Amino acid sequence: MNQRVLRAVDVELAAAAAERWVVPVEGFLWRARRCAEAMLYALLVEAKVDVTQLAEQGKGLDNLAKHAKLQGMIPRAMRDHLDSAQKYGNSATHFQPEGLASEANATIVANALSELARWFYTRDDRALPDALHGPLAALIDVRHRVRSPAELALEQERRSTHELTQRLRAAATPSVERPPPPFTARLAAIGVGLVALGGGVGFGVARLTLASSPDAPAPSPTVLAAPTPAPSVAPTAAFVPVVEVPAVPVAPSGVTACPSGMLRVGARGEPGAFCIDQDAVLEGEYRRCVASGRCAHPPPAPEPGCNWDNGPSADGYAANCLSWELARAYCRQLTGEGDLPTRVEWQAVAANRIGVRLVADTNEWSSDPPTGGMRHVRGARRGAAFAWSAEPEARGHRNVSFRCVLRSERP
Image (cartoon, rainbow, N blue to C red; front, side):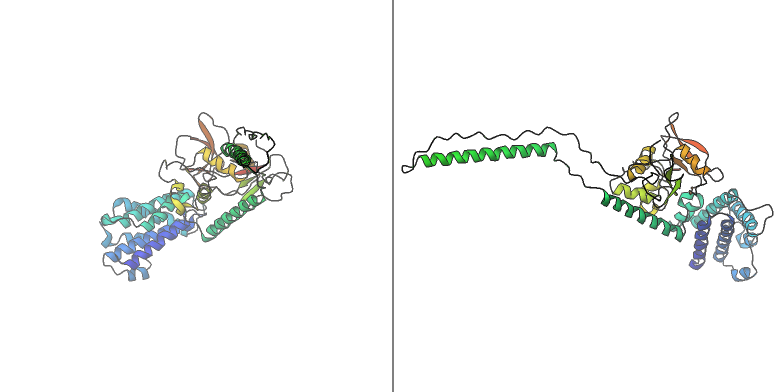
């Protein structure tokens, strides 16, 4: 196929994927129609059709699909997908008196465009190019959405700020003298006893040698004191250093702001006030916690789509496929007072209209106790941001992420 034309299809598909989760959805619907048109133009070029005249005439998706050279080339299922792209793409381009397009429209077109792209690139048993896996995943799953340069820069700044905060906290923490382990203490006591015993024996030999000399005066009898054994050291329990943790932001200690990336709920010093992450914890943040030894490494991926198992390429996505225990441990290692939000705290977020950012079709862990073998999680579907559901403990949690809160007292 003409590489220049194929490149045009690649560009249109990437542009549509970048618009997929932008609200309102009209931009994505328009981009999806352009991508479908680019595929048809590419098929016509492959069929030796001069598309210059068609482009000058402004032939749209419907006219291109009905071209004689494409009859019998496009399967019926793909023509249905083309119809969906045309219908919703047209409605997004023109003013609609009944209002804007809905997420349901975008979902239909996203599925149609994904199937069209897979068919277009894999015709004649060709392999799907590796570069297209990302855009195709972004069309279907919000966790793989293409992030804008501004979002990526903000996330990088947030990570840098978090790392700097951790270094400042470590520098402000007083050092703690650790006593030697029990085995080392015993070994030191034995060493002191041997040195003392050796000194006594050496002194006695010297006195005997002096006494055997004929010219030496008779020595007065001397009683050598037995070496005093070093006191035995009793085994000590495992030592746990006491780390001075700075007061959490909501405590009435003069702290005036939540850490970077967190939002305050309630007035400073008010009982029950807390700080909450504006975004879900990112895969990159959890991966660095594991690398530093502060977080446990998750078990092998229980199901496809677990981004902590995908390496640095998934650092910008919300961490998922982590159990409730691992998620809560991550929050608690932040300052010692970190935790997952409770259901009551999420209700406070909603009541105070705090601008947290939610991931569509993704749930989040809460710190509420399990009910009937399941833990409550917060549904984050569009239009039902604070609906509650439950997630079985045994599943892989591919659609479950989490965020942290900091509070002055545990509930």
